[in-house]
Length: 74
Image 1 (cartoon, rainbow, N blue to C red):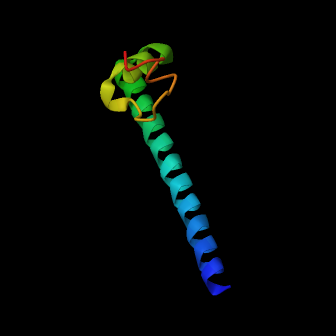
Image 2: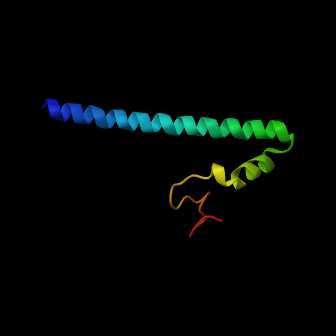
């Protein structure tokens, strides 16, 4: 019983850590985009398009519609 509880707690802790990492990455991306908008002084759509076109900002998730667009990176 103790083994089951410890495994369940480890699993839940892993889920929590993964969610916190995902939230941190999304906050970082929003911060980068807002800084780019302020630096460019232009419309938001242009800044987001420019930010998304940089390969360093692409994710590594296979099949991501924003990054991979079907059969590979653009």
